[in-house]
Amino acid sequence: MDKIELRCPHCGSANIFKDAAAAWDAEAQEWTLISVHDHETCEDCERSGDYMAERLSL
Image (cartoon, rainbow, N blue to C red; front, side, top):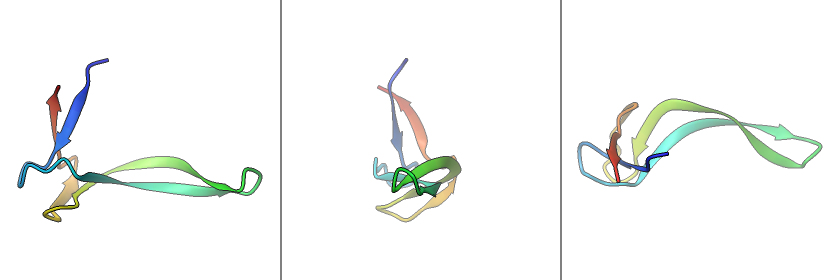
């Protein structure tokens, strides 16, 4: 698998976050990730959008 890096197309930051959903697992007593959404946010410049970040090959 090729490695990629996510970068903000507006400021160039790699500080990208993605929205997700988690559900409480009562048996395991912890949160379990159940889905990852399309929306991404740059934590540095606060720009956001669906699949906003550039995907760059390393």
